[in-house]
Length: 498
Image (cartoon, rainbow, N blue to C red; front, side, top):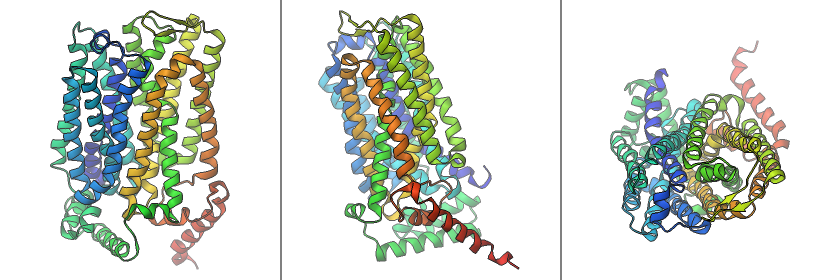
């Protein structure tokens, strides 16, 4: 790590915000199948389950929209700390719920905190990171999400054996712990240099950069140069740039906003949170008998998700965003299609006494469905998982980045909310048809990425201005970008010309 040790440390600490989101998602997926939880809240049907799961994401949608203003006004650091307090309040209400309304209210409040964290943490990470490791640091957000899912799955599995309401109250209460840890840790983390300079606190910014980049040496040439570059960027932004949300609708930012919103929406339209929220139900529906077996299968799912994210963290800056997303989309589409065909051809759907669906699949097909779920998770974790957060965080100019990312992140939560609301209903009514819908979306995503999304790997912020002011047809604009790269290469090497 060398000079970047402190940057990695700060980026890892702030990534606990992703852990909190992942923990809550994994938590509910297994709690929904716990007998004591069902009995306490009156055995909610598909609509009730959809409302309970999706109200968190409704809060996330509102929280992410508010985060842009809060992060600019009060700093990225303080905004993360406030989000921890809000989330802890919501988790406490859920843990002590006496009825369904109290549970739903707690989930909405917790969602406000998660929404703010999901927008602010990637911005914080990107602004403390050197440009050459920015993608890797931001991808720690997604890896932390997978760790949160993994830990929650296994805590739920252990608590499943408790024969009382403590089986679901304990896991819900435990999620307060990482929020408290993150709050305490952020008190010791620095403000971002960019925010400090934007608020006329240049000396503090240089102190922070010296700690992040040069072991505290404020006279380090790279630190001095970076401070001057940020000062100049801030000066130019104050003279020429607007800072309102209306600028997002103007050329050339409008195109980037559309791409950022679309990539966050497509991340949810992979269907990942149908798997993460409802995998135990899916495993049961496919013929995996017993609550313990389905919860155990979900625990294995969490391990696979976490491990499959590691290659993306290591290699996304080498393979590039476009190729990685297209390969991931193909993998997701094929697994959904195989699952839909196998299930549709062999199912013998019946309704159990509790209203759940049993597809009565042959044993071989049941195992095939479980394998396809795992292969889908691998495809997602290596592509859409991290890049869905990386791409929006790197394509916007600094002066509008926070506000732009509040909109793109809100689109993620909006689609998350809608999918969480309707998925339980569709799983019961059309079963394999839902797999087919997601397969079609993922096949379409391959074309969307190829046609509209420029490659952004190893690009500076100045390069982004060049890349996104060309043709909206990214696949046709590669010649212009190649000519630009050739010109830069020639400029950098002209001193060696004879």
